[in-house]
Image 1 (cartoon, one colour):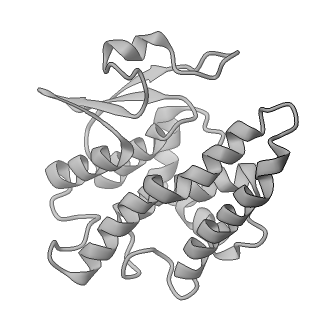
Image 2 (cartoon, rainbow, N blue to C red):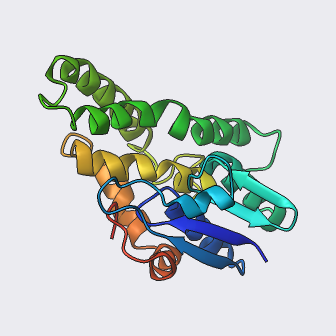
Image 3 (cartoon, rainbow, N blue to C red):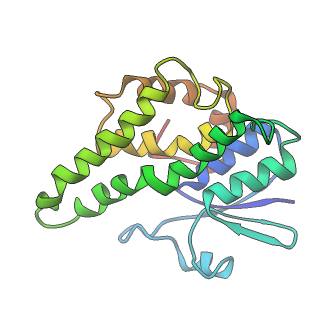
Length: 208
């Protein structure tokens, strides 16, 4: 059986949500962050040398990275669901959004988080970080001005992959200037599969 090695308050919550959307049976092994450092526990090193989450095991395969995990699950368990047909223009858009979520959009958010831990809050870097946050969150917000979902107005795994960006963005920066992203979060948080994933994964600071 597919096993999700789930770290609390992490990107692995998206993996649980995807599996619930697909109705796939899976096992969850829970790991808790260190209360002082907020780092993953050393037990995850027994699963993968990086010792980070998300990571899944499925038979002979151990897979890391959110995008790769989501792609693997959709290909092996999706039965054609939650992804456009390969070779279509929608599929090309889907691939771009899947890679964009972690390849570009998360960087300014990570910089915001880490500089916030500096004694001066990384004051000299904040204007550039805020400019990048406005750029990326604005880009995503505009994509939803005429659509509920990011790819061809159909809910897909790309929406699941992208969800962590506005969730973290709301916590670290606020979404007052990005109403479409706020509405997007309301839509995904209302989905029954999302709620079931919270029940499986436990308390999650980035979206109720």
